[in-house]
Image 1 (tube, rainbow, N blue to C red):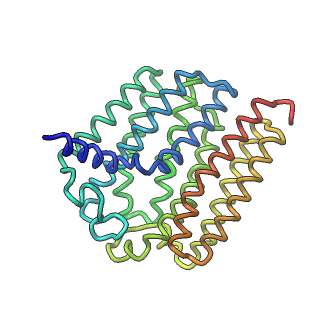
Image 2: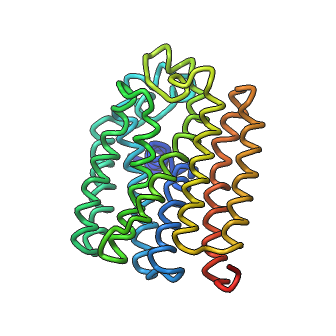
Length: 293
């Protein structure tokens, strides 16, 4: 294999893992970082932080590969996914299975440096990541399952730092489930027509003409859960100001999706990075300025 073919193969692997589209990594990373800050009381152990950040990148990449393996028969029928590496045969299924296994093993290797509870939770994280693509075949709102899979780093983080999972972890996970339903419904609104043709389930299809209202309700519950988390943790004005900023971003999302134009629905989906960042900055600022309560 000459150098050009090697470069092409690496590029295909990169696209298969969606490393060229980091939004998925960020949406998976923000809730994990929220949990790291809370569990570490603003000063999480840097080694544990590095393990979780690296593990997030590895498992999101593995999840994308698993998703494309599961959807290989469908992706060629959808305009947005018809050029993915498995569809175009740039990467074989055998190569994809090997890549997914290597990424998962690398992530598990990192987790093995942590305590037994975190290791046990990581096995469930793998099951969630591997099974999520199949929920789109039968579950009316697979985005809820995605929220659990994307948020499973939250209880894992508390387990790694504290050795147990406190109730606040489940409040944050609930917030993440609602948030995932909101942002992935925006994403699903782009593919609704294609999903209907190939009989794939999604929240955009299930919510139907109430999709915009449902998205806003889910954002509302997300902000409510984050407010409850703030009360539980005795957060101050700085944190709540960050939630107001996040609410402002949600208002912009409504403006983008209300006419259901695909390009604007996708912009709204991408904008969730700033929502997660705003909440993160709220936690950081509060822990740096605890007197502002």
